[in-house]
Image 1 (cartoon, rainbow, N blue to C red):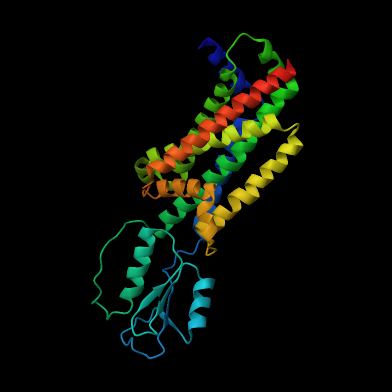
Image 2 (image 1 turned 90 degrees about the vertical axis):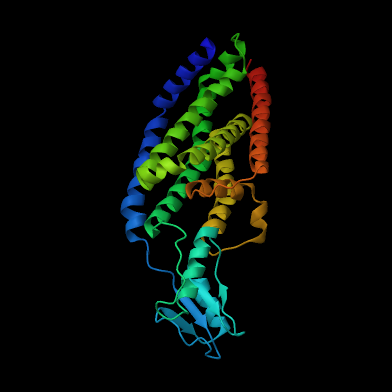
Length: 330
């Protein structure tokens, strides 16, 4: 325990001297300013646009908020250009809804709103399905995206930068001859990055989502953050131990940022839809974090078992690579 505490203090001092905590604070400030004075202020918080294709004119009682289109092709183009909108195809005699899926709660709201515009005023069977305002939804969405990026990309880069600095200082060579358990070297770094990511997630959520909603969603958000933090920290350690210098690591970082994170953001938050995205591991990880922010974290046991299995495999791999590095240094 004494060895672990000593390594923990050493790693904290090293990260502080490397401006890691200062950078995290700077990112937190920038993200908060962006959410509160950029994203939320200038977002489009209007109601969903509703487009109707009714060639036979059978829908007689239609609200003035409904926009009519003259063809099936025009309806599809309108929905493609306005991915938050709802289309109503009445060409077969029945109102058929067409829209891009977001999440179950929002989709129910959009469907009820669109169908209510086909009824005479005062005749709609209105029911409350949620109390989330457009601003609250926008805050949760952007906060989730920023947190995922911070941990998956910035955190991955940060732990590798610390390890490369230690390698250049000969720290691994010193550990190779010290009479302490080798796992302690890895565990101390994992604990520091895990705690820093959890604190970052807490502050980011509190400042941008608000105290009231944060209390409700915080346990699940911290759980998803902790799992993602451990996985990315271990992945960063493995890459840093396998690669010779930071230049090679930068290439691995770009692969993760571009090929791992970008498709996930596109598939989860835009009209772009790919059938293969369900096989993308980062997609399920991101959706787990997003569901936590919206209080709908109905994640199966298999999800957590797969997550923990990946973390365990990465830890064993990191152990093996670190032992090889110590033998080489020693």
